[in-house]
Image: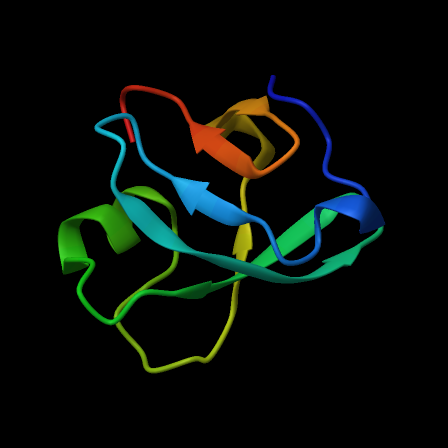
Length: 80
């Protein structure tokens, strides 16, 4: 399982395994980071992250998708 986000992770960029920005953390609540996705990310990535195809403004980031949390970003595992 990945690292658990904390309040200090609010505002960090979320980066996929290829180094592309997926979105930005807009809130962290009880160890769950909520991400505002970039408009450019495809439905396939959203589906793998469990975000669905609706037009929500923020989505929860699954802990098992997180590879690493650094000072400036949250990196997703390669499979995402």
